[in-house]
Image (cartoon, rainbow, N blue to C red; front, side, top):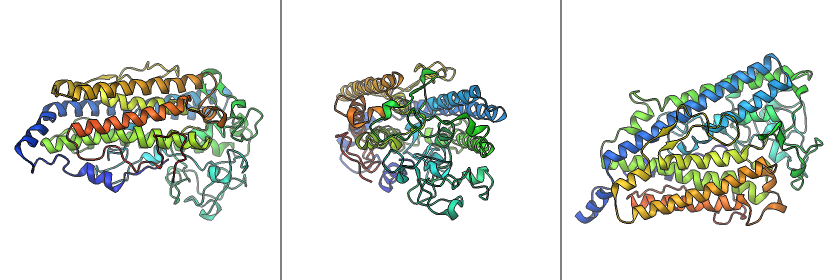
Length: 493
């Protein structure tokens, strides 16, 4: 799902005085004090913020590199420069995917003021696109690309007078409609304005669609949900995803070539600016910014609130967003368009990186990111090795907590084993859109097993929160309409 706003209940529980230090008998207060060490909570918060700053800085840098690659391609639209722009997009996803754990807690990605739900996530990483609003598409109802997948019910950019666009008219989209507003940042900012929020035209995935195009079969025809294994699955090398096959002529000899190049440049410009704004909320030594408020602990209740924020990001990303929205919806319905990176077939990396972000928050470590697309973090200049929940629990030395920590760490390892299998499958030529085909969807699938292990680790995060005397729900039950205890069950909503 593209714009997953926090529910009222989760906001209330995060912002409430979670600890409840008043009331109860003395023994209850004493027990609570044993698991809340304010000094050590401050250490944990500083590390959490250090990782966020490092990952967002890396996200900004790689987005700038993507913008530069797109500018180079616009200046000289050659096949080599197109390949370079695709590679830059894939690299830019590597640090950003690890920042998703900072969502669902009113941090800068979801909020501008630590209270409102007005953050830039929807402009940066919203999906799936109604790609028919942006450019031409193939729309065949008896395929992966029916009007409900590629079209929009309404839009804020005056295409078809702001009404529905279903992709059947190749001249009815932003790229083709010269009467529409000039392609500017202001135009691109009219993203996800429709009631169903399918009219996404900004962020990483808008650029992805322009670079790759629809993920068609090798013969250029639409897929029908049973034949995606016939599509070209690797571009140049097995570690560079290639779902779509947009021709170079779209950027050279086609009548709309210049508008496509301009569109990508403007979206990239906005993406960099949006990421910088989010990053700046995590800068150190800035009075009043999010990091300053987050790492300042007034008392025990405040410490509990801050721990709640971290665990809510970890728990809700694990179960609702990743296991549910980003995996089970596509897996249970064999829905290619519900893959998170369906144009490039890079969804295997989205899964890996989101799950890795949860692990980063638990262990207090950030290894950097993969700049060569071989699955190994080699860009390590901003690596962080700090104080995590594992250290915090070890220092508490409270009966039962160490056992719980060991159980959670075992689940993190199991999830890693499962998502590594998804990644390996993709590099061997069977990416997520092949794994979710009916013929491959079974209880042995790494998709099936990763959904289950993510569900289990979310449950253990909730147990950990309870043992730390956190009363708020840290796994938002409304984050998706999926029952992730049954990966094959159809999701609601």
